Length: 344
Ligand code: A2P
Image 1 (cartoon, rainbow, N blue to C red):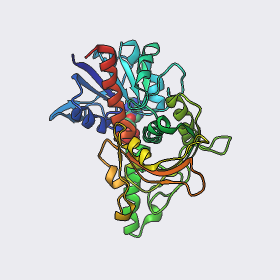
Image 2: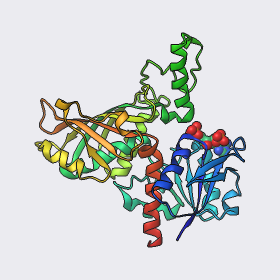
Image 3: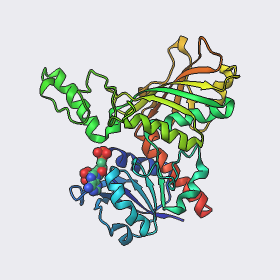
Image 4: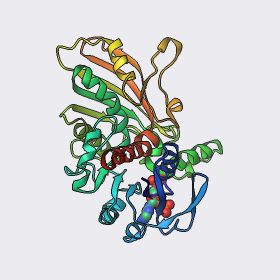
């Protein structure tokens, strides 16, 4: 069986990647319906060697096109306003924005970690895709939690500009060009709170009352929801001038009595679906954004036992933000949903 599939935000960074991933994973598509704002309506996207016309996102477009699966990636306010029309038309919505993630009725899914939660989709018609930083982190936490039981996670991120969409990627490139033209002062600086070229910015999203940012609190709450446990998490989220893969320096504290065996840790990580260990410091081998970019794996390396406590480890985790952190996770959710709900 094949499905009528809509992509809301078809002209955005994640939307464009979604078409590539849908094609690579041979997603069973009957009709593809790319949707964006009136600005892009009429333009073409390429899918499987064919041109498909972008339609304007409207309240009625889902019903008119018999949409059965709708990927949303056009920002939280668009999902807030339009997801209900897709649901009313009978579609399952796979939403990439933060809008529905913490709604207790909406499942929040990383298919390698909590696929069973997809079954809860029926209540609202919506399945939420977690924040990009959360996805790659929980893919490494899940096997470690099964191995030893995690008590606490401390994470600092090095997040690529792609997290701010096409606009963010363009702004980094334009600022770098302006730097080499000795004209950085005049370059546009609007996608981030400060200049991003030649800088790192320890703020992603807005401040919260507790001193953390909204992005940092997303990592806390989403991790707990996906893992179904109140693991303690403290995050510091930092924007770096990297194009499209996020890195994370992660410290995991296991339960008190654990004496970590690093070989067991490496095995558990390597055997987990879509996680790869690259960990050979002497030969300068470890995960980096340039290795992860354009792949569907979460890479883990620099794995080490704490110098003072036998129940603590530290490691480095890298994944492509646009794919693993967004498009690929959404497509994997879609494929699992098809498998679970349609017995294919
Ligand atoms: P458009 O190109 O027509 O503005 P990104 O995350 O890379 O910035 O992309 C955002 C995506 O969301 C784009 O595809 C954009 O379409 C889409 N979008 C933004 N605002 C709207 C809107 N009001 N209605 C429909 N799509 C929108």
